[in-house]
Image 1: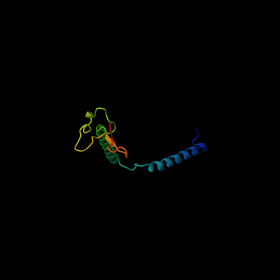
Image 2: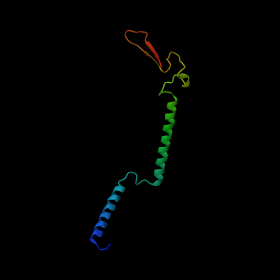
Image 3: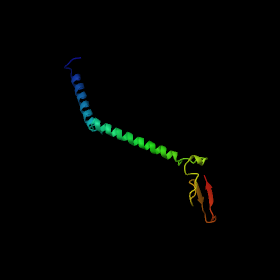
Image 4: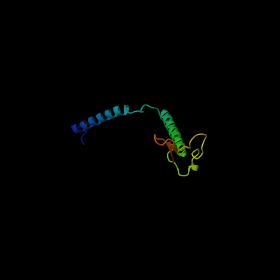
Amino acid sequence: MDKDSPDLHQDLNALKTKFQEMRKLIGTMPGIHVSPEQQQQQLHSLREQVRTKNELLQKYKSLCMFEIPKDVSQCPGLGRRKRGRRPVGTFVARSARASPGIRFDF
């Protein structure tokens, strides 16, 4: 290839233009100006949030709120009755005709 060919100069100018565009684009990317130490802190914080949320999710799943098992002895608080309260999972429907109510146990 000839060093002074017009095609070579045109290709070099196009390449320079692409490099300038990419430099501008990189400068606008979010977080590009954050130091590696700050990135590590953010990463640690986000991992801690994920760990905490996973622990809470496991805790809520263990409360049997998403599924009512047939054997309520598996879930703390479902089988025991407290003073004047119906066990969780019991609901009484009342209508104008049926004053005592119809009881549904899950």
